[in-house]
Amino acid sequence: MRITGFRALTTVQDWGRPVGDANGVHAGGVLRMPIVVVETDEGVTGVGLGSHVEAETVFAAIEGEDPRGVTALYDRMLRRTFKAGHAGAVFGTIGGFDTALWDIKAQLAGEPLWRLLGGRDRRVPAYASGLDIALADDELAELYRTYAGHGLRAAKLKGGLDIDRDRRRLGLVRDVLAEAGATRPGLMLDVNENWTRKQAVRHVAELEQTFDLTWIEEPVRRWDVDGHAAVGRGVRASIATGENLTGLEQHRPLIAAGAVDVVQTAAGWGITHFLRVAALAHAHDLPISPIGTTPIGLIHAATAVPNHLVAELQDLRPPVGMTLSHEIGDGAFILGEEPGLGIHLDEAAIAAVGHRLPDPSSGGSHIRPDRAGFHLLPASGNGHRTAVEA
Image (cartoon, rainbow, N blue to C red; front, side, top):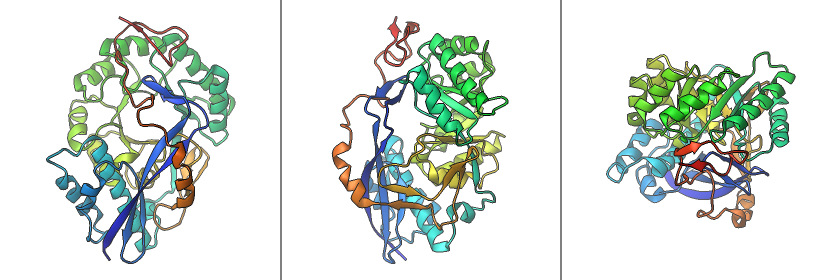
């Protein structure tokens, strides 16, 4: 069997409401979702979610190869791009191809990927994550009631701009989860690299007068090892970070310095990356947690590592034109028995939403504000859009 080609598709994740974080909001709630479909000479295809940046260059590393040699092909893709750099979006392209290759390998084995990788339990615990910073209080409560209806008893809110607003919103979600039966709801706050070290400690310490936060996520810039360690010493909550780190070389300094308590990896970086980071984290007795809008590849892989903690569950609906074989129930992803990843594409439906793809230049959480992290005072009542600058 040989790899013969690939198709690059782009669909959308339609949230049906504004979504975003401390950096910005996608007002229309429609986000691009790049997909790669890897083709073989025997008609078996694999699906991966990632980037399309430098796709032709990356694909040249695996064209004509046997797709079953996934981890060796992953390293070939890294070597093919090492001069120009394989971080950022290019790493996402490698991750997309990697995920598609694992999909093919599991299909050929006639097993779901979770079983091929050595998983025993197809139930993967999850927490709710609504990218919810733009929602009014009543909308926020209703959203998390929906999550709670699927058995989720832990939630991660977006915040970091307004202490009073964060306190009020955390309280609302805590009460919603408690009403649904959570004896002690799990609460996390994600600020998406929006603070300095001292801002982080002051903000979280004040919130901790009211809440027992499970973790604070990305309190400072992703590469700030000393900053993460300083925040960790100053607050009770665990420090979670890593979703924007690409490669073991970026995770290693944080882990070695004891600057992270919950190691995260993003779905777009691929399955092989997740497995390697999970092993590194396990060697330091740290848990790992997958991140992403559609993290299905990492959910399969999570069943096979000893240190998986919990997985992020964002939108309850899949991207347009995509059907997934897993279910959501009892506070978990419940993976299916279908060979491979269990992803099916309706390419006609994907083509039909082409006119809805957002303009890459439009605003949103992917653009860091000019004065991010430089706030003399927190914003007042408008924390999801602006901050008072120094």
